[in-house]
Length: 218
Image: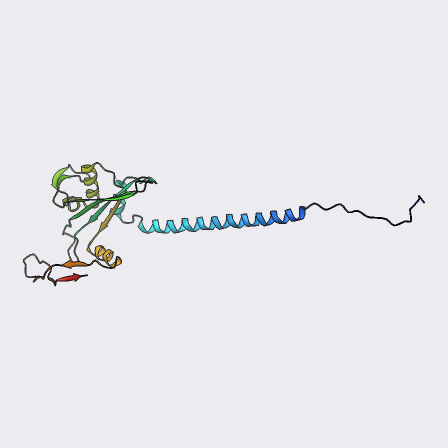
């Protein structure tokens, strides 16, 4: 046996590299990143489905709405858009042969560009003389509210586009029932009535009865 073979032996151990700790940290980081990606994908999918459901509720469904949609200009993301607000006087109980007129015609322009954010309104007088444009007919001069009674929403859109030279991206049509529902959604409108207003419904044209007293009325 070599010298000192039976003597005590001192063992020296090399420090182990910290691969195990780094591997655990890497796995945790990968797991958190995967969870973040899955969460982001879930949020994106939910947002897409929500937006799609909302778009589906306002999608043109009847024949008239589809015809109007073909006349509207495509709205570009991030650019100003213009909507035509059309209020027509169709009354409850009137027959189909009675033509309604759009006494309310307004252009609503929304500018989302940064630094120039604004909402502008332009209201047309109901008796404004213009060239009425109806598809399939030669233009003729009449009051602007006659465009709706002559050829419906399509005529109103084409008339406003032709006489203003402005693109129209959206059409919002409202009747009396929709107007009252919109006011109710806003919580009503308070008006300061300066004096007593009273009118009995005895006119030949069937005017509505009026009975308002001074003060704030809702």
